[in-house]
Image (cartoon, rainbow, N blue to C red):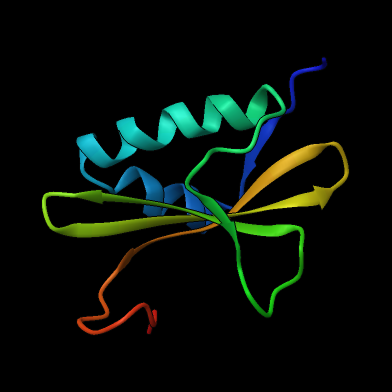
Length: 94
């Protein structure tokens, strides 16, 4: 199987690089899995954004970190948003 390219919107890459080292390390394994054509077990479809937009979530030291990516942009996988979830109640993301 051909390896997929991981591409980044500039703001998503900048925000991702600001994550703590532990959080980035956890996501790097998921990114490698995606590049090889797999779907990380912690990836889920983002409701309301379409079947080709997914989110990967990791918790690190009581914080929740998210990467949002799109699969249907040419042959590449695009990271379109990276953020720390700050909602204090439920699963809602502000």
